[in-house]
Amino acid sequence: MPKILIVESDEGTRYLYKVAVSFQKIEVEEAESLEEAIAILKNHKFDLVLLDIMTSDFDDLNIFEELKKAKDGIPVVIVSDLKNSSAMKHASILGACDYLVKSENSVGEIIKKVRSIVNEGK
Image (cartoon, rainbow, N blue to C red; front, side, top):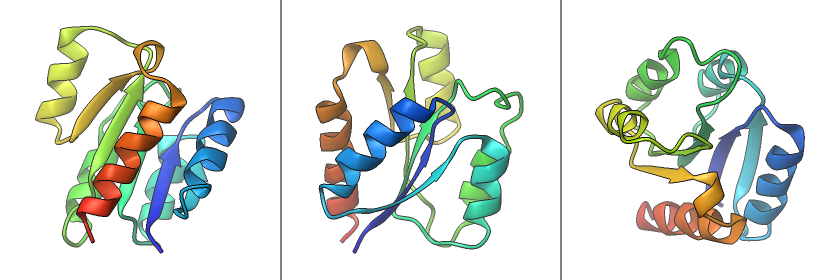
């Protein structure tokens, strides 16, 4: 079964993503901060990371270093309330495979993106 890590500081949004992703027969781990996500990444293998860059501790980019260290790399989809070309460009430079603005993408669209990336890796 595919497995993803959801990094989202808002508990309600994290729960919504978890339920929607689990319904797709994808196993979910969750973290509410980058610090917690990095600790989880050190001990578990994932097919994808769904990352909200608006977590309170996103002042450094350690998570991308951790992802690069992971065997075979881990695709990262960034979801954010930030809609500006600078943030999108920065995410691309850091290796994110996609950048989705929450206000422009429904939960269904975000889950569809997750499912397509996870299924590509099979």
